[in-house]
Length: 227
Image (cartoon, rainbow, N blue to C red; front, top):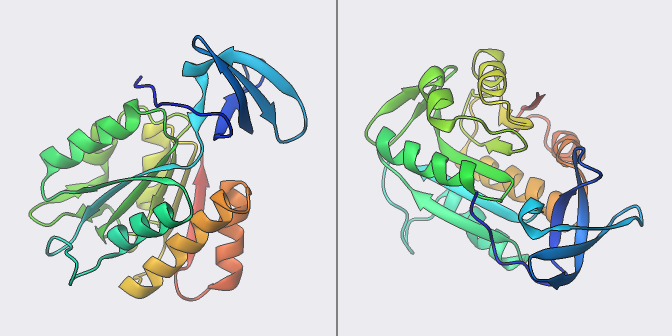
């Protein structure tokens, strides 16, 4: 697994006594060891490599044309928004299955926890700029995503035929996606609101999802699936 540079004060997810991950803050670093303070007040000392940055998002986007300063897209706009609120956004524009495989592998091997997919979608497919890829191929490309949170702004991928298969096949901790067709502007709005609640307000992915559902029930019709 690749290791990201940590700093005192960073927000992270840290394992508590070898169990599941909990939100925490780095309080001290020394020779590969991190001292963390959990949100409930508990403290711990553990190897830095066991920490996952809580505010890092891999954005993988594929739309009809490459985004530029004159042509904005949901994924690129999200990346700028994340940087504005102090999060780490790693944006990649792709066109083919080969590129999707490459960047999904990077996201899987990273210590970051969040993956954002921004592309056209069908009930069992993602539509890239030059190719289509069905959910079984995506599962094979993604591999084991245990502990990862995946947000897909792709239309219709919140249906059981895609979402349940994806979570079961990749073991992703959670998958959030719209059940219906979603307009570009609405996708940009709900994704930014989701990550704002997550990173600025410090809530869980499920609480952030419920907030977006309450605020914009008709615009996205988001679904939440967990392993």
